[in-house]
Image (cartoon, rainbow, N blue to C red):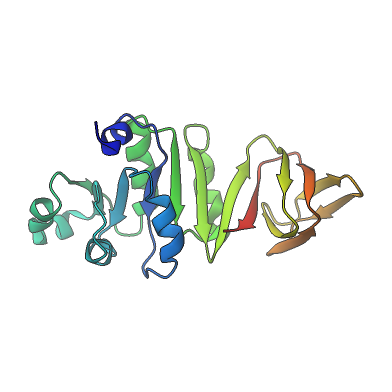
Length: 202
């Protein structure tokens, strides 16, 4: 039984590739290790195919689908997922939810657009990557986790208060554009009155 069969049972997080340029091939390779369901867009399908990556769905407009039917043969079995230009994120997440996937990794996604992910978080565990940073949500406004020594990024609503506690310190800060913290190795607790995201180096 192939690993790809397990993916069809939604055992592994799906992979939604929104990136236009394939820069971080190391992260991409690690995410492909367990042969996830892979969705790409009409803007990057040729580049992804040129890397020899097996894809499962292409997010595309009707016009693109009509002009490129050969893609269904070259990557068989693969499907087109109809989407308006610029709505690839929403169409991809809606498709995964309908197919009863429980988790997805998104590469690349700008953290300034995290508001677009909020409607989907009740149905999907979402992790996204951007410029070498992996972002994961504190769904209920709280996270306790072991971190290695080094920087993290905290994203949320502008001005949102975050309480941070570690073995050696406790402080409260407000989220501003690209809020970075330097952490010591160990357990850290972050809490707020609303959801926020933590970004760590890949």
